[in-house]
Structures are given as structure tokens and as C-alpha cells.
Length: 88
Length: 360
Image 1: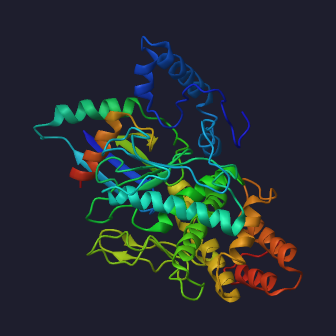
Image 2: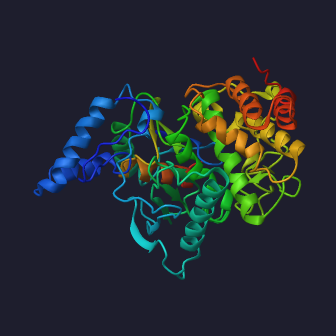
Image 3: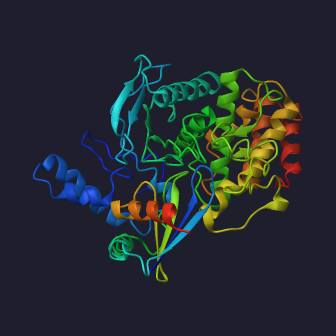
């Protein structure tokens, strides 16, 4: 499973993106469960968000959903944070 | 529901942009009707609004404040999220209370005060809504959180990760910037997308910079015209996040990339990202303000700032305004307040011409 996260907006307006490929990873099932729940709670179109708030797109195996701060589910927040930290 | 200063009235809690949906779901099933009732109504309203709601109405969904600041006084509250994401978090300092050991809390409290003071003394505006709105801030939001934002009701500050960004309460212009989003929300309510969105961002940079200059007692000639100076961690190649004097020159770094802001319409960036480039193209109106303010000299908040404030609050600026609409109104405001053909009108007209925005 390929999990991509792109973050745009924010006070600085600086974009960040990262990707995790779970194939061969020992913690793949954990990633898959987290990604599925994060995507299930996402939206097909970008939400309005708030001024200076981060906007995110999460793409899992080609399917893209949108979400924005501060209205993230716990799973979305965890997934985004892990991908941006551990991904390449 | 009409955009603008929408209130839901009453004294019951209203969960709008603050409470995440999963928490609302849980609250809605709570045994206590005082908790489940508002949560159910919020969920219902959210589902009704979802789909057709635009950004301007989303963050206009603020609850009516329970209290008002007394005349001429602020009413500040600073909360600590303790590295969580629940807002507003735990109250740690109220109005009139002494400083505590937490520097972020103290900086947020002072920054709220400085912003309140500029709007009151320079523009006779009593708080963000012009009617004594309590000022609320939350510090230590999330972990290593590299951002600050206005959620429609309050300011939220992250600690930064310490590697790229430091604590977002450090630069006073960042605090002023966030609160100025509140002023815009209660006045022109510029749509947060494309050119009106870039104007919304620029207005926050302008008043953020003015709050810093006012606090430091700096004239337009003395000011650095930087946004977010002191926010970048040591080792990052840059002096700030944006420069109103030289947009595009604030940073150039391996990790951050290069400051993408244009100074003139020749460099206008068309993009769907960042809400249509609101933090990119704001460089153009930012630079126009800098040019007008430095051409006039003296304290920037007095004449240039007054003109920008008149446009923002005058009632003629559309929530879908483009740069040229804003420019036209600044020329009109300069004439009306300072006289036809005066130095102010000349400086403002020339500034827009220099950034390539033609006044219709």
C-alpha cells in the first residue's frame, strides 16, 4: 500500500509531502488499518478549513481524500503525522 | 444562513469548528442531555451545511460571546492545550492576572494586549468585532506543531518542531496577524480563496506588521517589514517567512525551499494549492502597502494604516474583492480622509501602479 500525504497552506504557506510504501514492512497491517480509517473519514472535495489552517490530501493506492485543521479525526491526525515524519 | 456575524444565541454550548466530528458523535450519545443535545444539533447542522458551505461562512459560525470586555479594556484569556488538540484547553491566565512561569502564555497574553491597543488607540475599534469581543488564545497546541491559525473564534499557536520553526508566539506580528483575521471576519469577510483570499492574508500581514511597529515605536523607515522574524530555527537560511519590503527574499533554504512571493502582478502565481495561493500572491498587496507607507513616512499605522483600515471596515469592500477593487477603494479612502490630490492619494495611487495593479 502506498500512502501519500500532502500538506498545504498554514501560516508559512510552505508545502510538504511525503510517502510511505508499506510493502515488506513488519508494521504494514497497522498502517493499513490506520490509512483505511483515515480515508473513510475524508472528503472528496477540499473542506473550507480556517484561515492559516493546514489543508491535507491523503492518497492511498490512488484514491485521494481531503481534510483540514483543526477538524481532523484522530486517525487522520495520527496518519498525517506519521507519514510526514517517517515517510520519504 | 447569511454569511457574516452569525450567532446561534442562547447560553448553551455550541460546538462548531472546535470539536472534532468523532467527539461530537460520542457526545451525541451521552446520557446527559445537556451534552448530547447541543452535540446532536451541531451534527445535524453540520450535515445540512456540508457541501454548500464556503470558507467564509464556515468560520463565521461563531457562538455569541458569553461576556464582553468593559469599555476601553480588553478581556483576555490564554489557554494551554498541553500538547493535545482539544480547544480551547485549560485556562491558564485571565485578564489582569500576573504573568506566570510559561513564556508562551505570557507572550500570547501581551500580544493580545498589543493588538487590542493598536486597534483601540489608532482606529477607535474596541476589540476584534468592535464590540468588546473577548480575546482567546490557546498555546502548546499539538506536538511539534509548525503553525498558528485563527479558527473563527480564537487563536491557536503551536510550539514549532525546534528544527525548522520555533514557538509561534515568539513574533508579535504573528499574534497580530491571527487576530487581524478575526477583524476581517467581522468586517469585509474576504473569501479565503484566490485574490480575495490573498487580500485577507495581506490585511493580516499589514496589521500584524503595524502592531509590531506600534509596539516598538518604529517609523515606516525604521521598520524591517518582515513577517515572522525570529520564528525560524537557528540553522535555517532565512530571516523571516515573508518580506513586505522585498517579497520573495525572506528565506532560501534546503528544507524550506525559496520564498515564493511575487512583489508585482508580473509574478502573480496561478495555483489551486494553498487556497489558490493566498500566502503567495499576498506579496503583491503587501508590497503596495509598504510602498505607500514608506513614501508617506512617519508612523505607518497613522496614514497608510488608517486608509487600509477605512477600506476594510467601510462597508464597500466586497467579500469577493480582487486586488483592483481593493486598490480603487484605498484611493477613494485616501481622498475622503486626507483630501483630493493630497500626498496620501498620490502615494497610494503610485504604490498600486508600481506593483502593476491598475486602478479601474
